[in-house]
Length: 523
Image (cartoon, rainbow, N blue to C red; front, side, top):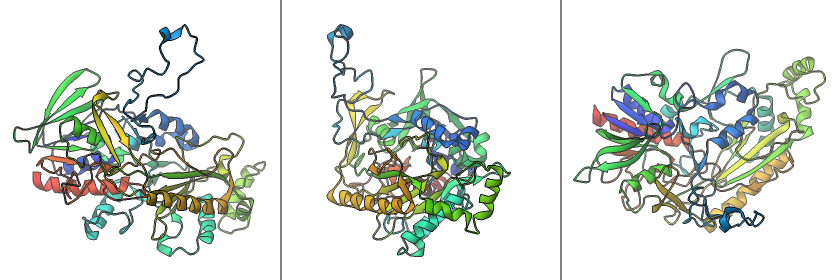
């Protein structure tokens, strides 16, 4: 075997697509099951979820596994005293996979993993903006190379900002916010959000949301150089006697309860920003920067019901009037002027100098938020503002040599806090979101502005960061682990900088850079 890839998300798929395209033999292993006919397909492509995306929220929740749950501090005293043989009711941490080492005040409570072929891309939002060239991107890669890698990544993920531009609500929201934020320069003005999505032909209004299968392309349907093993957990990478190369990987068949030894010339780990350093730790590969410099996107959130004065524009603005009139002819009893089937809005306020946060206005399925049955869904807009956190070595995830997770791997434990600068930016970010929200509507009951549980975006980064100095980084500029000739890493954990924008496109771009480097070594 030429290359073993651990992890089947868009990043692992980017390595696989590039290597297989060069005639290199690739085996990919994934701890989770294959949930769709095409490996790694985005489950949002199922018809019923495109017709009612509120139904998809339970799918997201069902595919998230919380990584570190502190022991319960609350004893349930209302239990029948004869029950549980008199034991305290919160002593079941081993059975319920609670983490006795986790300080609840230093946790990232919503940090999760998705065990499935395709990983998080089975249910992600598909938001794929480029990172700001100065404020977010890693300076160790030149601007020309960034542009080449971004362009290739956008092609693989089918990124576009035009698929929803005919949405009545999208144009309405962009107009209103451009009026409100008129001081922003055109490059960073309110605009359509880049998304990894492609509109299907026909009149049904269906789209194809990108998943790992999109990145895999034709090899998802079968290729002599590519094999995928679902429900196979890589438990250890075994170095050779010199300690400078990985000799083989130990892989557990979760269905057949078999232990496999997989030899390969090169190894690529793309298991996520927490599970990738977990595998290195379990393998005895423990450089000091491993798990350090962890960043995550704090998020402010609210939902609004669009203002009457905005909706009144729909009947008079010549851009909207024909669509609105057709809707009224079809549904004369409908008092909402938004046409049935109008695509959901996907609006973007980019991060820029003086605004160190990233804003999105959408109407998407969420694993949080509120379902209000008596408010027409066409009137609701979701606002999500993402902040940046400075990389600091004390913010980290560690791994236990005593406690294990659901798969018997070293239990992750978070040690995370905000600096004063982080906190000040979040306060300003909330003010900015409130400005946008009040320009659009009134707050939906129970969805008033708040900071969400830390970790909900699942944008953890920095844990196996790229850099030029092995004292403060885990991989070099080609994503190769310092001190190992044949071990490469990919994913959000490689991103070494403070960011506020969605990380997937950047992670794929960095993976493509590494994959081309690896291809050059193997050919």
